[in-house]
Length: 160
Image (cartoon, rainbow, N blue to C red):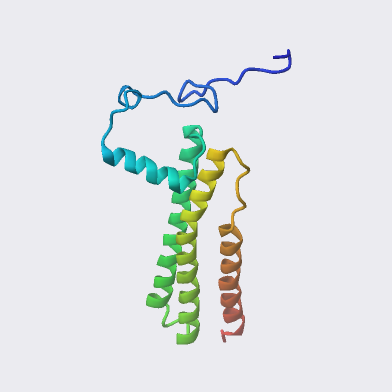
């Protein structure tokens, strides 16, 4: 190690250097454990595609991001339902249905895509690869822009 290189500092959470393998517990070291624990680890290992456990802070941050996408999805679904249920006096049936369906589709795609985003990021962290590009972000931006454009046209065209 040269004077310019530093040893990795231990994580404040785990007390281990980044990339260090987690210590086995007594039961794991002895090879003990129930069959369901092993099958869950096998299923998780297959889903995540191997690699090493990342720092727990990164895994938890990925989970928080997933939950934020889920909240966004639920908000879009609630918005679609609200448009359909409460705007009959404001919008005509075609416009109301179009905006509601657009919001519901955005909610569906955001909710479904958030799981695959979480999984791809978790895999990349475990393999120490670059994080994948977020495909949900442009989808949400374009979908939101379409909904906004439809509503802007409605406001401009609607008689005062």
